[in-house]
Length: 389
Image (cartoon, rainbow, N blue to C red; front, side):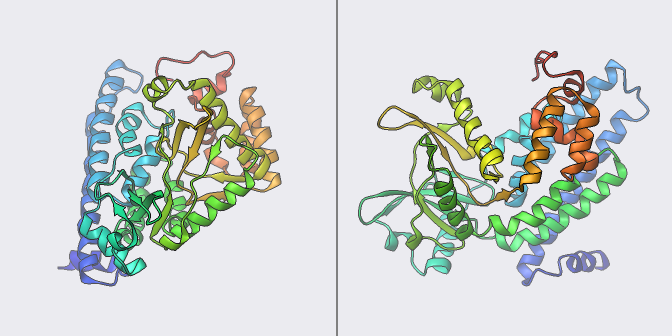
C-alpha cells in the first residue's frame, strides 16, 4: 500500500483514477525494463577487459537484447515513448548500431487508435462525426505515428485530404510519462555516468506542449510556405482550417515515397543525388538564411514525388515544432562546421561552448557530421567511410 500510494503521489497531476491507474502501470513497465537493461549490462560485462574481443562480442549481444526490450517498451506504452524511440533511432553514430537498427521501425510504424477513439476525438473537438463532415472517410489509417494517426478523406466538394487525428489518451499520459522518463534517466545516469541523454528529456519537456497543439502546427506550415516560396520544389500541404482544431488537422493529401525509400526512387525514375541535393537546399535555407528550422526531419516526415510536370518535389510534413535561431548562433554554427571539417578539436570545443552545448561537444559534432567521433577528430576528409557508416 505504501509503495502504491507513493507512486500515485508521483502522478499527482493526473486528475482521474483511471488515468492514475494507467500511469502506475506505465511507470512500473518502464522501471522494470530499465532495471532489466541495467542489470544485463552490469552482469554480462562485469570486470571484463574493455579492449578484449570477448568484451566487444558480449557487449554487442547486450546491446541487441536491450534494444529489443526498449523497442517493446515503446510499443506497449506508445505515445511519447514512440516519439523517443523515433528520435533514438535517428542517432546514427551516437548510439550503438544495434539500437538504431531496431528503433528505426518507429519511423514508419506505431500502434493505432481504434475507430471508437477516433470518433471520440472528433466529437469532442469538432462536435460531429467524420461521416458528417466528409463525403467519405477511410476507416483504415494511412499511417500511425507517436502522437497521431492519419486518415484519407474526401471533402464534400470532391477534394482529397489527409486528416491527422491525435491519439485519444496522449494528452492524459504526456505529463506523467515525462516525469517517469526524467526520474529514470537520472537514476540510470548515476549507475552509468557516461550516459549523456538527460538533454533529451529536457527537450521533450519544453517542446511537447507545442507538438500537441495542431493549430500551432497548421500556423507553422503556412509560415514556412510563405518564407520558402522561392524553393519551387518544396511542397507544403495546404491546411483546411474549417476541419481542424487543437487535436485534429486536415491537410491537402500528398502522395509520395519516403525520402529513404530507394526502391520507390528507382520505380519512379527519381535520382537519389537530386533528392539529397534538394533536401540539403531546404535545410541550408532554414539554417543559414531564414533561421527557422524544422525539428523533426525523420524519414517518415519527408516524402518525395514527381509532380505533373515531371519535377521532383520534396513534401515536408509534421510542422509541429520549429526552432528559431539568432544571427549569432548561425555565425557560431558556421565556425563550428569549419572546425569540424578541419578536425580542429579546440575550435569544436570553443564554438560548441558558445552555442551552449558545452560538455556535449562530442555528441553534437557527431550528430552534425553523421560520422563517428574517431572520424571527426581524425579528419573527415582523410578518413574513408567505414562499412557501418
